[in-house]
Image (cartoon, rainbow, N blue to C red):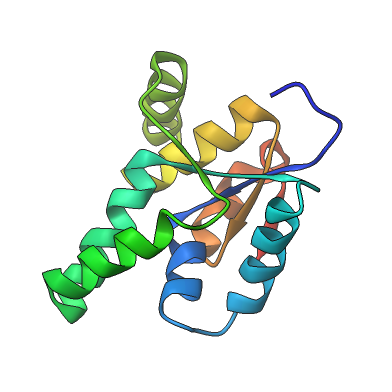
Length: 136
């Protein structure tokens, strides 16, 4: 993504804040509005999207999760599929740091794209200055 516009990666926690109308959703919404206006790019790894959908399904049932999945498709959010480089970076991050496997994908994608991570998860603090964060 060679661009002078900022790039943001959403982790599952950030998108869940929006999907479930929880505290912090305003920050996520602002960034997605900016992406809609083409002022920035908003990305999410496919693994993290799966995490959002399964977590909604566990709590609210699969029909609700499917509706949310369809609603997410309407957002100005680029879902990044499996890529070898990001995959192996995520594996290495997981091996070296106490973060969840899914979070390793969000972090690896953000690092690979020179992006800032939007998250509600304090777990990413272990990566220090390798990963700029915006708390939601």
